[in-house]
Image (cartoon, one colour):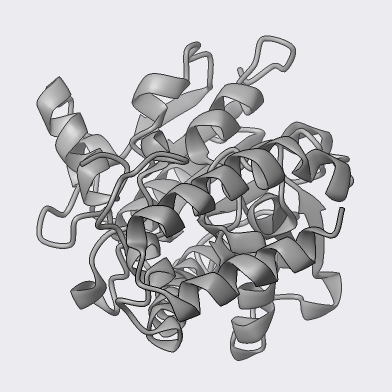
Amino acid sequence: MNYKKIHSFMNGIKKRTNINGFLWGSSQIYQEVFVRNISRDIFDYNDEHILERDFDVLLLLDACRPDTFREVMSEYDFINQDSFETYVSVAGDSTQWLQRTITPEYDFSNIAYVTGNPHSDIAVGSHDFKTYDEVWKYAWDDQLGTIPPRSLTDRAIDTWRTDSPDQMIVHYMQPHFPSITHPELGSGIDIERIGKAWKGNIWDKLRDGLVDHNEVWEAYVGNLRHVLDDIETLVNNLDANNVVVSADHANAFGERGYYGHGDFRVPSVRRVPWVEVDARDRMSYQPDLYPVDNEISDDEITDRLESLGYLE
Protein backbone atom coordinates (compact mmCIF):
# COMPACT_ATOMS: atom_id res chain seq x y z
CA MET A 1 0.00 0.00 0.00
CA ASN A 2 1.35 3.44 -0.93
CA TYR A 3 0.98 5.51 2.25
CA LYS A 4 2.40 8.63 0.63
CA LYS A 5 -0.36 8.56 -1.99
CA ILE A 6 -2.98 8.17 0.75
CA HIS A 7 -1.53 11.14 2.60
CA SER A 8 -1.47 13.19 -0.62
CA PHE A 9 -5.08 12.20 -1.35
CA MET A 10 -6.22 13.33 2.12
CA ASN A 11 -4.47 16.67 1.75
CA GLY A 12 -6.05 17.12 -1.68
CA ILE A 13 -9.54 16.57 -0.27
CA LYS A 14 -8.86 19.08 2.49
CA LYS A 15 -7.93 21.77 -0.04
CA ARG A 16 -11.03 21.18 -2.17
CA THR A 17 -13.90 20.93 0.31
CA ASN A 18 -15.29 22.50 3.44
CA ILE A 19 -16.93 19.34 4.77
CA ASN A 20 -15.14 19.65 8.09
CA GLY A 21 -16.85 16.75 9.80
CA PHE A 22 -15.92 14.32 7.05
CA LEU A 23 -12.37 15.62 6.95
CA TRP A 24 -11.93 15.37 10.71
CA GLY A 25 -13.20 11.81 10.84
CA SER A 26 -11.11 10.79 7.85
CA SER A 27 -7.99 12.34 9.31
CA GLN A 28 -8.51 10.49 12.59
CA ILE A 29 -8.94 7.17 10.77
CA TYR A 30 -5.78 7.93 8.82
CA GLN A 31 -3.82 8.74 12.00
CA GLU A 32 -5.10 5.77 13.96
CA VAL A 33 -4.80 3.14 11.22
CA PHE A 34 -1.94 4.25 9.03
CA VAL A 35 0.24 6.19 11.45
CA ARG A 36 -0.22 4.65 14.88
CA ASN A 37 -0.62 0.99 13.87
CA ILE A 38 1.34 0.63 10.65
CA SER A 39 4.12 3.17 11.13
CA ARG A 40 6.20 0.63 13.06
CA ASP A 41 6.59 -1.18 9.73
CA ILE A 42 7.68 2.04 8.03
CA PHE A 43 10.18 3.27 10.62
CA ASP A 44 13.00 1.04 11.80
CA TYR A 45 13.04 1.27 15.61
CA ASN A 46 16.34 0.83 17.28
CA ASP A 47 15.35 3.06 20.17
CA GLU A 48 17.92 3.32 22.91
CA HIS A 49 17.72 3.93 26.65
CA ILE A 50 19.44 7.19 27.48
CA LEU A 51 21.69 5.61 30.12
CA GLU A 52 23.13 3.32 27.46
CA ARG A 53 24.70 6.45 25.99
CA ASP A 54 27.81 8.17 27.31
CA PHE A 55 27.45 11.50 29.12
CA ASP A 56 28.34 13.30 32.33
CA VAL A 57 25.70 15.99 31.90
CA LEU A 58 22.68 15.61 29.63
CA LEU A 59 20.84 18.82 28.71
CA LEU A 60 17.47 17.54 27.61
CA LEU A 61 15.34 19.74 25.37
CA ASP A 62 11.61 19.10 25.09
CA ALA A 63 10.09 18.39 21.66
CA CYS A 64 13.21 19.30 19.65
CA ARG A 65 13.59 18.26 16.01
CA PRO A 66 17.08 17.41 14.71
CA ASP A 67 16.64 19.52 11.57
CA THR A 68 15.64 22.53 13.66
CA PHE A 69 18.66 22.07 15.86
CA ARG A 70 20.95 21.83 12.84
CA GLU A 71 19.41 25.02 11.49
CA VAL A 72 20.59 27.08 14.47
CA MET A 73 23.59 25.27 15.98
CA SER A 74 26.17 27.15 13.89
CA GLU A 75 25.15 30.30 15.78
CA TYR A 76 26.63 28.93 19.03
CA ASP A 77 30.37 28.58 19.52
CA PHE A 78 29.98 26.16 22.45
CA ILE A 79 28.33 23.49 20.25
CA ASN A 80 30.68 20.94 18.69
CA GLN A 81 29.02 20.74 15.28
CA ASP A 82 31.19 17.84 14.10
CA SER A 83 29.74 15.65 16.85
CA PHE A 84 26.14 16.09 15.73
CA GLU A 85 24.15 12.89 15.23
CA THR A 86 20.62 11.61 15.73
CA TYR A 87 19.14 8.63 17.50
CA VAL A 88 15.68 7.20 18.12
CA SER A 89 14.08 8.13 21.44
CA VAL A 90 12.25 5.54 23.52
CA ALA A 91 9.05 7.60 23.40
CA GLY A 92 7.12 10.27 21.55
CA ASP A 93 6.00 12.29 24.58
CA SER A 94 7.40 13.30 27.95
CA THR A 95 5.22 11.07 30.12
CA GLN A 96 6.20 7.90 28.33
CA TRP A 97 9.82 9.02 28.04
CA LEU A 98 9.98 9.30 31.83
CA GLN A 99 8.14 6.03 32.38
CA ARG A 100 10.43 4.17 29.96
CA THR A 101 13.60 5.86 31.23
CA ILE A 102 13.22 5.95 35.03
CA THR A 103 12.98 2.19 35.46
CA PRO A 104 14.19 -0.26 38.13
CA GLU A 105 16.75 -1.85 35.80
CA TYR A 106 18.98 1.21 36.06
CA ASP A 107 20.75 2.76 39.03
CA PHE A 108 19.97 6.46 39.52
CA SER A 109 21.47 6.81 42.99
CA ASN A 110 24.39 8.93 41.74
CA ILE A 111 22.42 10.89 39.16
CA ALA A 112 20.87 14.33 39.65
CA TYR A 113 17.62 15.06 37.85
CA VAL A 114 16.73 18.75 37.55
CA THR A 115 13.42 19.16 35.74
CA GLY A 116 11.04 21.79 34.50
CA ASN A 117 8.62 19.22 33.11
CA PRO A 118 5.36 18.84 35.10
CA HIS A 119 5.00 15.23 33.98
CA SER A 120 7.62 14.31 36.57
CA ASP A 121 4.88 14.48 39.19
CA ILE A 122 2.88 11.67 37.60
CA ALA A 123 5.44 9.68 35.63
CA VAL A 124 8.43 9.28 37.95
CA GLY A 125 7.43 6.59 40.39
CA SER A 126 10.71 5.97 42.17
CA HIS A 127 12.62 9.01 43.36
CA ASP A 128 15.92 7.23 43.92
CA PHE A 129 18.11 9.97 42.44
CA LYS A 130 21.04 11.52 44.26
CA THR A 131 19.27 14.84 43.69
CA TYR A 132 15.67 15.14 42.53
CA ASP A 133 14.68 18.75 41.89
CA GLU A 134 11.22 19.46 40.43
CA VAL A 135 11.98 23.10 39.66
CA TRP A 136 8.62 23.65 37.97
CA LYS A 137 6.88 23.32 41.33
CA TYR A 138 8.39 26.55 42.68
CA ALA A 139 9.64 28.47 39.60
CA TRP A 140 6.66 28.39 37.26
CA ASP A 141 5.93 31.64 35.42
CA ASP A 142 2.14 32.05 35.27
CA GLN A 143 2.41 34.92 32.81
CA LEU A 144 4.48 32.89 30.36
CA GLY A 145 2.46 29.75 30.95
CA THR A 146 5.65 27.70 31.24
CA ILE A 147 8.92 27.58 33.14
CA PRO A 148 11.66 29.84 31.73
CA PRO A 149 15.01 28.19 30.99
CA ARG A 150 16.94 30.38 33.43
CA SER A 151 15.28 28.63 36.37
CA LEU A 152 16.66 25.29 35.17
CA THR A 153 20.06 26.82 34.46
CA ASP A 154 20.25 28.24 37.97
CA ARG A 155 19.39 24.96 39.62
CA ALA A 156 21.68 22.92 37.36
CA ILE A 157 24.72 25.11 38.08
CA ASP A 158 24.13 24.99 41.82
CA THR A 159 23.43 21.24 41.82
CA TRP A 160 26.59 20.37 39.89
CA ARG A 161 28.76 22.65 42.02
CA THR A 162 27.42 21.60 45.42
CA ASP A 163 25.98 18.06 45.19
CA SER A 164 28.75 16.55 43.02
CA PRO A 165 26.67 13.86 41.30
CA ASP A 166 28.33 11.42 38.91
CA GLN A 167 25.84 12.39 36.20
CA MET A 168 23.16 15.03 35.81
CA ILE A 169 20.08 15.31 33.58
CA VAL A 170 18.59 18.77 33.13
CA HIS A 171 15.14 18.67 31.55
CA TYR A 172 14.30 22.03 29.94
CA MET A 173 10.79 22.72 28.62
CA GLN A 174 11.71 24.55 25.41
CA PRO A 175 11.33 24.46 22.41
CA HIS A 176 7.96 22.97 23.43
CA PHE A 177 5.14 25.46 23.04
CA PRO A 178 4.14 27.96 24.30
CA SER A 179 6.83 29.93 22.53
CA ILE A 180 8.38 32.51 24.83
CA THR A 181 9.47 34.52 21.79
CA HIS A 182 6.00 34.38 20.16
CA PRO A 183 3.47 34.26 23.03
CA GLU A 184 0.62 35.30 20.75
CA LEU A 185 0.50 31.79 19.27
CA GLY A 186 -0.54 30.22 22.55
CA SER A 187 -0.01 26.67 23.76
CA GLY A 188 1.02 23.31 22.36
CA ILE A 189 -0.39 19.87 21.77
CA ASP A 190 -3.00 18.16 23.94
CA ILE A 191 -1.27 14.80 24.25
CA GLU A 192 -4.05 13.24 26.30
CA ARG A 193 -6.51 13.65 23.40
CA ILE A 194 -4.44 12.42 20.44
CA GLY A 195 -6.72 10.79 17.89
CA LYS A 196 -9.85 12.37 19.36
CA ALA A 197 -11.79 15.51 18.42
CA TRP A 198 -9.95 17.97 20.63
CA LYS A 199 -9.63 21.51 19.33
CA GLY A 200 -7.79 24.76 19.94
CA ASN A 201 -4.08 24.08 20.36
CA ILE A 202 -1.41 25.37 18.01
CA TRP A 203 -1.10 22.08 16.08
CA ASP A 204 -4.86 21.88 15.52
CA LYS A 205 -4.82 25.43 14.20
CA LEU A 206 -1.87 24.70 11.95
CA ARG A 207 -3.48 21.59 10.51
CA ASP A 208 -6.74 23.47 9.89
CA GLY A 209 -4.96 26.38 8.20
CA LEU A 210 -5.91 28.87 10.92
CA VAL A 211 -2.30 29.89 11.50
CA ASP A 212 0.54 30.27 9.03
CA HIS A 213 3.03 27.39 8.83
CA ASN A 214 6.01 29.74 8.54
CA GLU A 215 4.86 31.74 11.56
CA VAL A 216 4.56 28.61 13.71
CA TRP A 217 7.96 27.38 12.50
CA GLU A 218 9.50 30.77 13.31
CA ALA A 219 8.01 30.62 16.81
CA TYR A 220 9.32 27.08 17.29
CA VAL A 221 12.83 28.00 16.13
CA GLY A 222 12.70 31.16 18.25
CA ASN A 223 11.89 29.08 21.31
CA LEU A 224 14.85 26.81 20.55
CA ARG A 225 17.19 29.78 20.28
CA HIS A 226 15.80 31.11 23.55
CA VAL A 227 16.73 27.96 25.47
CA LEU A 228 20.12 27.61 23.74
CA ASP A 229 20.96 31.18 24.74
CA ASP A 230 20.44 30.12 28.34
CA ILE A 231 22.31 26.86 27.93
CA GLU A 232 25.30 28.97 26.89
CA THR A 233 25.23 30.48 30.38
CA LEU A 234 25.06 27.00 31.88
CA VAL A 235 28.00 25.50 30.00
CA ASN A 236 30.14 28.53 30.86
CA ASN A 237 29.56 27.71 34.52
CA LEU A 238 29.89 23.94 34.51
CA ASP A 239 33.02 21.82 34.84
CA ALA A 240 32.25 18.56 33.10
CA ASN A 241 34.08 16.51 30.47
CA ASN A 242 31.16 15.12 28.51
CA VAL A 243 28.18 17.44 28.18
CA VAL A 244 25.53 16.59 25.62
CA VAL A 245 22.41 18.34 24.31
CA SER A 246 19.59 16.06 23.23
CA ALA A 247 15.78 15.80 23.53
CA ASP A 248 13.17 13.54 25.10
CA HIS A 249 11.28 13.44 21.77
CA ALA A 250 10.81 15.56 18.66
CA ASN A 251 7.82 17.22 16.99
CA ALA A 252 5.89 16.70 13.75
CA PHE A 253 5.01 19.54 11.39
CA GLY A 254 2.64 17.70 9.08
CA GLU A 255 4.78 14.73 8.11
CA ARG A 256 2.51 11.78 7.21
CA GLY A 257 -0.45 13.93 8.20
CA TYR A 258 0.59 14.35 11.82
CA TYR A 259 1.21 17.51 13.87
CA GLY A 260 2.75 17.87 17.31
CA HIS A 261 3.86 14.82 19.26
CA GLY A 262 2.57 11.74 21.07
CA ASP A 263 3.20 8.02 21.17
CA PHE A 264 3.50 7.78 17.40
CA ARG A 265 6.20 5.67 15.80
CA VAL A 266 7.19 8.14 13.11
CA PRO A 267 10.64 9.67 12.53
CA SER A 268 9.47 13.27 12.90
CA VAL A 269 8.38 12.51 16.48
CA ARG A 270 10.91 9.92 17.60
CA ARG A 271 14.23 10.92 16.02
CA VAL A 272 16.12 13.44 18.17
CA PRO A 273 19.46 15.28 18.09
CA TRP A 274 22.55 14.29 20.05
CA VAL A 275 25.48 16.73 20.08
CA GLU A 276 28.42 17.39 22.35
CA VAL A 277 29.06 20.86 23.79
CA ASP A 278 32.06 22.46 25.45
CA ALA A 279 31.69 23.19 29.16
CA ARG A 280 33.93 24.98 31.61
CA ASP A 281 33.14 26.66 34.90
CA ARG A 282 34.38 30.20 34.43
CA MET A 283 32.46 31.30 37.53
CA SER A 284 30.92 34.07 35.43
CA TYR A 285 27.44 33.55 36.85
CA GLN A 286 26.10 32.91 40.33
CA PRO A 287 22.64 31.34 40.50
CA ASP A 288 20.12 32.98 42.77
CA LEU A 289 17.27 30.46 42.64
CA TYR A 290 17.08 27.84 45.37
CA PRO A 291 14.54 25.09 46.05
CA VAL A 292 11.42 25.97 47.95
CA ASP A 293 9.69 23.33 50.03
CA ASN A 294 6.37 24.10 48.46
CA GLU A 295 3.95 21.28 47.73
CA ILE A 296 1.46 22.37 45.11
CA SER A 297 -2.09 21.20 44.73
CA ASP A 298 -3.50 18.90 42.07
CA ASP A 299 -5.39 21.90 40.68
CA GLU A 300 -2.13 23.82 40.26
CA ILE A 301 -0.54 20.87 38.46
CA THR A 302 -3.55 20.74 36.16
CA ASP A 303 -3.27 24.49 35.47
CA ARG A 304 0.37 24.11 34.49
CA LEU A 305 -0.31 21.17 32.20
CA GLU A 306 -3.10 23.23 30.62
CA SER A 307 -0.64 26.09 30.04
CA LEU A 308 1.56 23.69 28.08
CA GLY A 309 -1.39 22.48 26.04
CA TYR A 310 -1.74 19.03 27.54
CA LEU A 311 -5.22 19.52 28.95
CA GLU A 312 -8.26 21.59 28.07
